[in-house]
Length: 156
Image 1 (cartoon, rainbow, N blue to C red):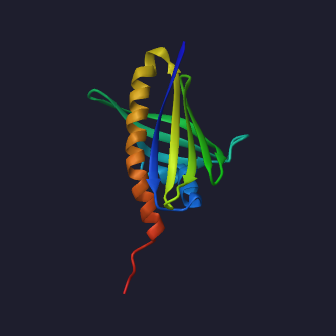
Image 2: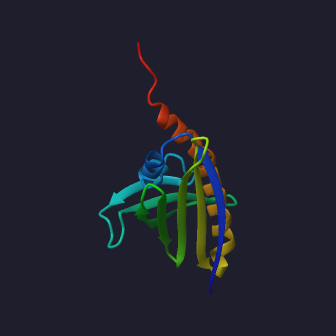
Image 3: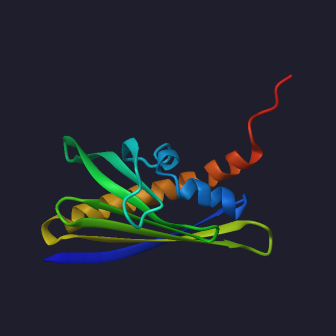
């Protein structure tokens, strides 16, 4: 039996929607910010996907460290929406939908909803890991987008 639940978060950054969409739609670049990812390998896009990847994460359960590998697809990559789906055996799916809005003060607000489905025996662990990892990613995202906007430091 599968269990399903969602969580959400918002990030604000001073960047263009296209810069944010480029980062959110590129799992190679997100791998630098995501605390669990240790390797990302781009694949030819699967049917219906804009981009496809194999991703390896490093997880812990008490004193035990282990790696998991999963397939991830970017399904939608527009200037105002990015949708990704990651699938791992057995029957575990993480769906991320990010909506990008420019606010009146010029900042970009990114609203993200993560939905995880997993077999009941794995669900609690998988959900805790996903939420902790994505909230860490959220904390790093604004800094990365602001840094990218400023460009490299000037040299003399």
